[in-house]
Amino acid sequence: MSEQADDAPWPVDLEGFRLWQLEGEDGPLLQELFDGLPDFSTTFGERGAADAVSTYISLPEGADYNDKLLPGLWHNGTLIGALDCITGYPTRSEWTVDMLVVAGRHRSRGYGSAALSWLERTAVGPDAGQLRPCETLSSR
Image (cartoon, rainbow, N blue to C red; front, side, top):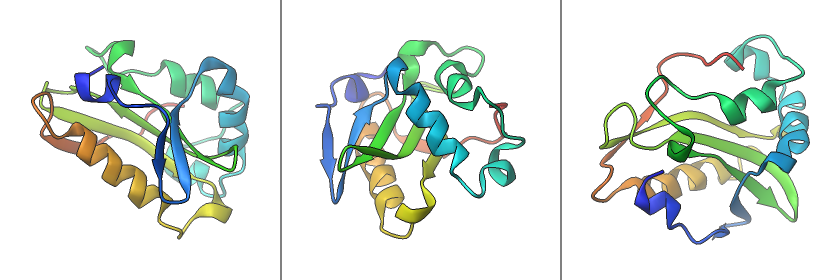
């Protein structure tokens, strides 16, 4: 993972919510979040029982787990969203956002925008200069 993301002071408190790296034990909460998204299949394809597991392990060719940034968006102790980003991919100066999801009842409150703004501020520096969206849907 890039120096900026690795040095992030977890948790990161933003307006109305907190970013905190997701751990393996958060997998069931992430799956529950995915299961509750009304537009999941439109965005990511057919739902599956292992969508959360796929999120933890999916990496583009050439990246490794040290490049993966996977913070959850937490509000009052509840997982309300997740951000999946590959740092230094496809080039050292780019970070690729693979996914940003926010639970339906927490949308339109600025949480997603605030998370992306934090990511942009974190990415700017000697290791990265550009955020880019993932160009293909991942197979979750």
